[in-house]
Image (tube, rainbow over all chains, first blue to last red; front, side):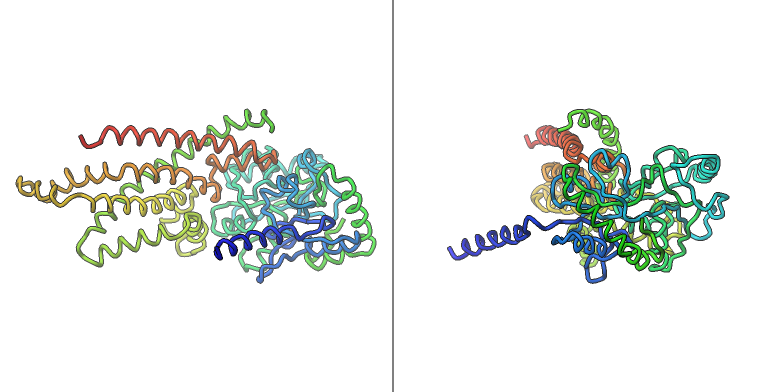
Length: 275
Length: 224
C-alpha cells in the first residue's frame, strides 16, 4: 500500500509542476542551436541575441515570459499546437511561412552566405559583394549564373526547413546536390569533415563557428538577401493571436527607439544587425 | 486533417521506401554474416576468442543505435588522419555509414540469437552424427547450422522488424529514407500529423509482410 501511495504522489506532483505556469505568461520558443542568434551556454542555459531581446520585449510589454527550447524542425507545428505562444529563433519572414503563421515586424536582418573550407576551388568566385534577389537586375542574374556553374555537381549542405534550403532547391542556382541536417552544428561538422563542398547559412553562423572552433571556414561568393531569403527576422505567432501580435509590434517599436535592439545586435553580432 | 496532403505525400514516401528497403536488406545481409561469424566465435573453447565475441555483442547491444550511427558518421569524420586514408571513400558517404552502423548493430543481436539456438541443440543429435561416422565439419554445416537457423526463425523475424524501424535513424545522417522524406515534406508544409500517418502506415505494411513471411517459413520448416 505504501508503494501505491508513493507512486500516486509522484504522478500528482508531475501534474502539479506542469501546470504551475499562469495563463498570463508568454511562452517564447527558441532553438538554442544557432549562435549568435540563440544558443546554449556551457552550463546549459539559453543565451544569445534573441534570448536577451525576448526578455527586453517582455519588460516593455510588462508581461511574464518563459523561454523554452524547441528543435528547429518542429518549431512551427508546435506553435500551432499551442506548446508555446511565440517563436524567436532567427526565423525569417517569408511568404511560405506566412501561409501558416503570422509574423511581427522584423527586429533584425541577416544576410546569408556560402562557406567553404580554405583551399576549396570555390574560393575567389567573381561575384559582387552582395545580391538582393528581390531587386533582380543584370548583376543579380550574372551572379546567379556564376554560382550555377561553380556549384554544378557540388554537394551543398544546409539546415532542414530553412530559407537556405528553399533557395538551394528553387533552381536559382541550377540543380545542386542539397544535403539537409537537423542543426547548424551538424552542417558545420560535415563541412569541416569534407563531406560538403560548401554550406549555406546565415553568414554570422559561419563566422561565429570559425572563431570558436579555430577551423579554416571561409565565406565565399556574394551575401544573399531578399527573394527566398525573406524580409528580416521577426517574432512568429499564431494567426489568430492578434492581440499578442500588436503587443509584440509595440514592444519592438519601443525597444528600437530606446536603442536596445542595436545595442544587443552589436553585442552579439559585432555589428548593428537591427532593423 | 488535410486529405489532399495525405494523397500527395503518398507517392513521394513510396519512392523513399526503396531507400529504406535497400538499407534494410544490405544491413540484414551483412548482419547475418557477422552474426553467424561471432556466434561461432562465442562457441569457441578459447576464452580470448569467445570473450572478444562477447565484448562485441555486449557493446553493440548495450548502446543506442542512434549513438552508434553518430559515432560512425560524425565521430569518425572528425579524425583528420582517417580522412587521408582509403577508408574515407566509404565513410564519406552517409549511405555506407548507415549500413555499417546498422550491420554492426543487427550483427550483435543476430549473434546472440544464433548462439542461443546453437546451445539448445541436444548433444544427442551431434553424438548420433558422430556414431554414423560423419566428420565434425559435416555435422556442423549440415546438421547444427540448419537446426540453429530453424530454431532462431521467430526471434530473427523480430530482429528484422526492429531493424526496419531502426533504419529510420538514417534520416539523422541526411539520408532520404521514409522518415527522411517525411521530415522533408513537413519542413515545407508544417503539417506533421498527416505525413507521419502515411509514413507510419508504410512501415506497418512492411512489418505485415515480414511477419507473414516469417510465419510461412516457420510453418515450412517445422519439425515433422
